[in-house]
Amino acid sequence: MHSYRLDFGLFSLQGSPPPVDGVATAYAPRRAVLDKILVDGAVEAGAELRESFSVQEVYFEDGRAAGIRGRTRNGTSVTDKALLIIGADGLHSSIARMVGAAIDQQKPAVACAYYTYWSGVSVEGVELYPRDHRIAIAFPTNDNLVCTFMEWPREEFHIVRADVEGQCMKTLKLIPGLEERIRNGTRAERFLGSGDLPNFFRKAHGPGWALVGDAGCHKDPNGAHGISDAFRDAERLADAVDHGLSGRQPLEAALAEYERQRNESSLPTFEFNFQLATLQPPPPEMQELFGALRGNSLETDRLIGAITGTIPIPEFFSPGNIQRILRAISEAR
Image (cartoon, rainbow, N blue to C red; front, top):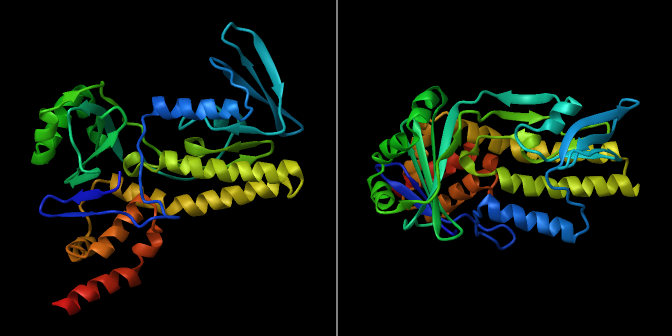
């Protein structure tokens, strides 16, 4: 995916994010494909893969996580000792629960979401359609399918869950162009979704343990940053573990630096995604900014970069930058 369209109904902004290290292309592989690539790569690199293995306990020695107890697929009990236990087990992380990882910062869940896949539907890169108390996003994925993702206020979850397809099609009526393409296509999968979309930072490390990905930080999925941030933080955590276990740096200090970097990188997106998840109309100053970007391809690209992560959010949305954009439009008139 190279282009993004932000459609407000009365007008739209379209562009491409500025590149990072020469790359400005986005990918949205389905997890069934991506997960196998990652598992195969890990095994090739020397990891031991245990499928259908259930971790039942993290045990401690002298106040430090020292290993795990679990069961194999045939019920055999296994105890493994470890220098470090890493929980990369998602939003409802059992490792986080077992080690008692505290939540350092959180915001309430304010949205519910459902997504599905369609064949025979064309899209122009990523298409985002914010509407009053609704948002719909459409983007291509592998096998020539298009994914549609929609959010509603969380208090409407019981209504949406009772008739997901009906509510999705009702939302699409607010977007005639996309609705027509969807109606001419074929739904290829069932709807998947949740009313449980919390926003939190958990403590990222403790004595003998660490967390990465959604296990440690979960933000509303409307910005689709979860898997990208997980890749970034997994690399940082791997570096920290290497520094600690090789003796180049005390392990606790290396893990503390990993947590600092994670928080510093994730907090702006965490806050931005939460604001989007409230599904409220943009405040007047933001509406003025969006209007000023019409016809300004350079700054539209930078806005899209802020949304997608190639431009720092604080940099683009700083008061000085917004004033500069608005002043340029005023002077042009």
